[in-house]
Picture 1 (tube, rainbow, N blue to C red):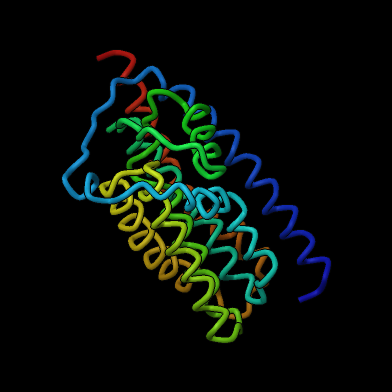
Picture 2: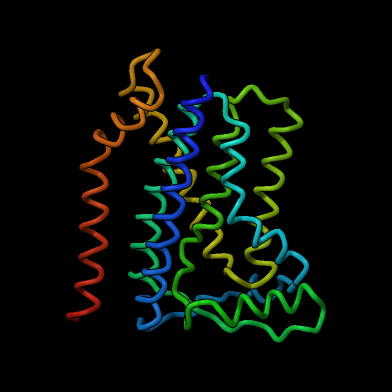
Length: 241
């Protein structure tokens, strides 16, 4: 793959990331006004708080950039971008339709605990951006996209293991409930295979990856519009109950 194509994908990835963060923040501000539910169950109460996992948790914000380093099959990168886009739209619908918030634990005085306390203090309150967990869904997508890149098995397994550590961290530092984790996992395991099937069916063999990305975006436009309208319906229903 020519360096110029990789550079274009780096720019696309960075623009996508900036846009994603901006929209996530906007959703977070809106979610602060919503009434929330607390679906904590006995399993959540049995899971211990492990503040040291906060370092794994915060790394989830740069974990997707691994793909920009390891990717040789840019069609897999296309799938990752599109899967994250779809998962985000569906998750936003879930966040606003079923806002989830819950009590955070009292922490100690270690460095890890202080960082975690800082995250708690700067989260949108009362929360609501929980079910389904995008941290979990995106970690799975990165693991899926890292396959088929010509990596050694140990590298593939290492990326999968780190994705699992990120997923575990979401409940071990009490940023998510088990329900959120299961929702994010279910979302990733539905979106990825369905999107891959559609991609394989719609994109001719040998098509240039960048062209395939924009072609697939056009193919997905009706679905993206439906998700966007569904999100709008949820917001309108919240504003005019």
